[in-house]
Structure formats: C-alpha cells, structure tokens
Length: 388
Image (cartoon, rainbow, N blue to C red; front, side):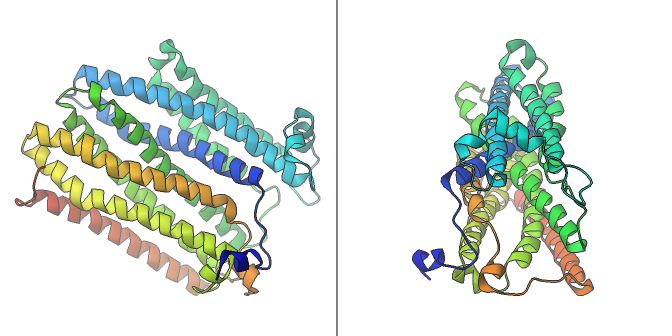
C-alpha cells in the first residue's frame, strides 16, 4: 500500500506540525532528564566512585556529566512548556497553537472545573505535573553554576524522582478507569515510557561523555569498562520492559499482522518496531562481541586494547543506538488512534487466557535476557577471544 492510499485510511488524521514537534520534543526532554539521571545514579556515579580511578579522569567526567544534566534541564523545561501549550490547543477545539502559548489561555485551561464524575479536575493534575517539571528542571539547571557542581550527586539524585514523577503524575486519570483493560493500558504505557526514556537517554548521555576521551589518561579504559558493564545491565532491563509493554500495546491497537501495512497507524508502528529491533541488534553486538573482548582485555591488563575497545569501538555502536532511539521519538507523534479502528476490527477483550499467555511471554523474555548475560560472560572467559 502506498503512502497516498495510507493517507486515505479511515479513522486516521496526520498530526499538524506543531503536534509533531511538541510531542517529539517533550519525549526528548523526558529522555534527557530521566535517562541521564538514572544512568548517572546506576552507572556513572558508581563507576567514578570505584577505587583505582585516576583523579583527573573522574573530574573530567564529572564536569561533563554536570554540563549535560544542566542542558537536559533546559530542554525539559522548554519542551514541557510547549507540550502544555499543545494540550491547551487540543482542548481548545480548533484553537491555533500560537494562541495556546499565551499565559491567559494556559491559565484558563489549568483552572477549568472538574468534569462530571471526575474525582479531580484534569487541570489540577497538569498543574501538579508541571510544578514537578519545573522543580526537576531547576535542580538540573543549577548545575550550570560551578559551586553547584560540587553537589552533582545530590542534585542529580533529587532530579531523578522528580523527572520520573513528571510522566507518572501526568498519566493519573481524572476519572476512575472503567475496567481492568484501562488500568493495564495506563500501567503498560508508563512502563513503556519510563523504560524507553531510560534506554534512549542513557545511550545519549554516555555517547556525549565518550567525547572526553582526548582529555582522559591512558588508564581510563578500566573506568569505561566498568561504565559499559553497568549500563549493559540497565539496558537489558529496559529492553525487557520495552518489549513486554510494547507487546501489550501492539495487541491492543493492531488486530492482525496485515494491519501493519494496510493502515496508517500500523505503518508507523512497523517503522517504530524496525527501529527498536535495530537498537536491540546493536545492543546485541555490544553484549556478544564487544563486552567479552573488553572483559578479556581487562583481565589480561592490556591497557592499550582496553582503551581502544571502550573509547573507540564501543562508542560507535552506542552513537548508532542513540540515533535510532531519537528516530523512534520522531515517529511517536504519528501513532495516534489505532490500526483496529482504521480497519474496523473489534476491540480486544482481556481474559484469563490472555493474562496467562502474557505472563508466559514475560517469563520467557526474562529467561532469554538471563541467558544473554550468561552467554556474554561465557564468551568473556573463552581463551580464543581477541582483546583488540
């Protein structure tokens, strides 16, 4: 089916440019804040605090991390404002986006009374969400100040739960979910967002940190080997969560394989799936090819090979993964509606059998990720794995 035919699909309307930019920008801001703070807490901070690191290397990476987090705060703040204006425009029944940017219209939207049957006004939910967004942004933007950088860990760990709360609070429904399906939708949607932003944002911040290699010592390979090892585990968890939640969302919105190329929603979902699979493939290269060689080089105390692997080969793959992740964010605004509604397929109904099958898939996926880690470790112990 050509794009011309896809454009004529019933039940689908191409989002306006402002919607594409605001939604992609918002998730880019979330990825920057959530991904960078989680990666700092789980990967960078522990690696820098490990014994044996050169003091100069630690200081270089701390400064670059602080600068990245500060800019992430700026992006989150700006993208959050435009996302809020986008909500105003969508609620304004044809209100131009330019008018939605005005404080008066934003104030009217946030102050609107609760709808009938709602436990809280929707505007109140968004007020809380945006207060949290401002606080998270402020904690990160403070890192532009040299004095504040001495408190990098404290500010990053403060911004982490705040930035997570931005998306979690924003998803709180003003009315109680009508059935279990709606509850599952909310839960899996947030799992998908959080795990995806941690994965993409983590890749981006580490790709940025590798650009400091010219200012690092010859012994920085061991430090970066620890960084890649720690982040590989974080990324594996994110992959599992993204795939699990993605399966649920795909089942809810797509009634059959054919709808992936016969509907507009399905077409863009297929593009997203291919991009995610490419990211997983690149991650597989890291896990099965580079990580074992890094482990062997570290074990053999091959300083030159270790530095080459950790700051030459590995970053190339990570940059490719990060670029694919950003492309995924660019596709998100086009995933509106569902392939089922376009094709006239009935909506799915969650049953005990579906839940059981889903649980089995989750266990299978968890087992496969565990096998992935064990296989990578086994390859690292093989004597015939080259170190360069």
